[in-house]
Image 1 (cartoon, rainbow, N blue to C red):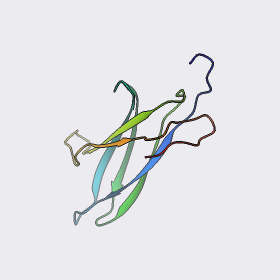
Image 2 (tube, rainbow, N blue to C red):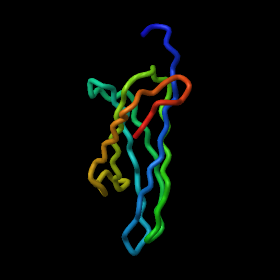
Image 3 (spheres, rainbow, N blue to C red):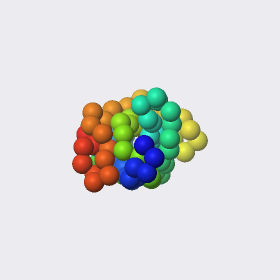
Length: 103
């Protein structure tokens, strides 16, 4: 609604490099509203050590309270997919005080 406080939603996911060599990865996370419209895309780039798990943070900006989903995809720097898309649905609602978001 007009005048509603905006929130800056964020989430972190753990990714595993199950290869025996370092892997350069670009993570893309698309924030979508209840109509499945893409609102923002957060991109994080890094190199994963062999056999390691890394926590990847995604930050989005200035969204009104509401229900959202986030679709995440890991790709090689040239765009080749390294993972199946992962979709997180928030069963709660993002609120201005930071409570209510559940992935």
